[in-house]
Image (cartoon, rainbow, N blue to C red; front, side, top):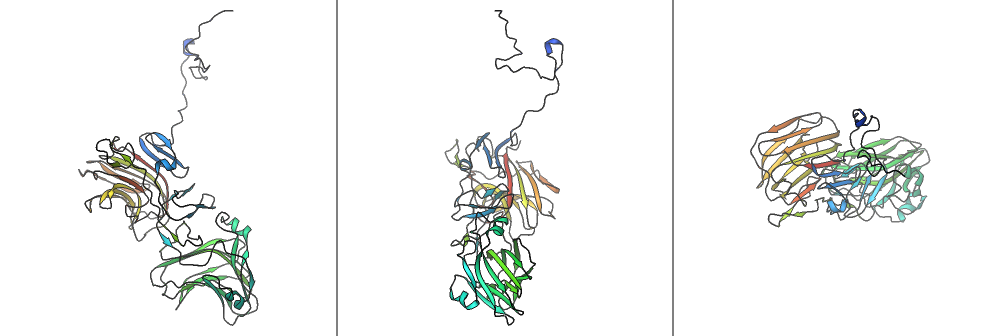
Length: 444
């Protein structure tokens, strides 16, 4: 047996130390181009990376669990669609995310009191027999001389499943049908709205045989939509109308038609959010408060937004990168993407404002002391926002929009304790939309 000294070019694991596409250097070869190493999914300078679409979270260069990064508070469930349009039920105090991203929601109340996703079966019956059942929040009626309508709650599981509702519905829908040759049949979902503030309604609906009319009715008609026959449910909505105080939701079908509806919601809001308020017995969707798990400052033992914040120098300079999806323009209040501070009077914040501009604002002692703003966004869609905050070097940019810079010597708020995503310190100005990614870097 001979003993041959192992060449350093062959490590013990048996992996050659030169690219296999090249002749070994000691034999006169030259190294060939190597493919780049696979990089981490976060920015190389990031100290915090939140990939909400994929559910990946990093802090301090280490991937961490959702619960290790966020301290979520929301005392209500939430229903959110995933990328395939299938609604996922999420419990109290859970991060409101699917593979679409994070849905930073505010608080809403559904004024519809009927059980709108898990009602009991009711064999279709005439108007008197249906009303005699005394079901919560719903009654039936006729218009235009009709008298032969049938009203019930029927099994329509296959169609509701195809609409993405299998996880949040028991497969039943309210049914209104009318034979004969005149008039219409309708259901009324109460109570009345009670005021003349802006409202919006939404529901899953399909009809056969004739166009259905979906609307609010009080002293007049409001938010009217004509629904064409289809075998498939669609989410139908009418946003930002002003009813009279007596108005109630009244979907109806003319003779020869059948209307099936589920998941009705009526909100005192200018829009219908993607977070659906359709859970029986819990008509209020409470805001998701999403601060990061705090750390302790080495210098004084006080709280900091996360462990390592002070050591990384974020009190003095910071950079934030975000991918956000703008689904509506000209909202009636600013939409908060992220921000860090002590309270509502001392913080920096990144927002999408009512004038359709992205803005980075520094606020101290209740006054805004520095504001950077992008150009005006004229279309909805996905935007990447990049902001740098450092005394003497402030900058803001957003996809396809004019940016802004400032050489202001203004400093960031001192003693920052908390970083929140999707709402401010008073749980006001929620983003009410999808945040796909957020990363925090040291501004250098």
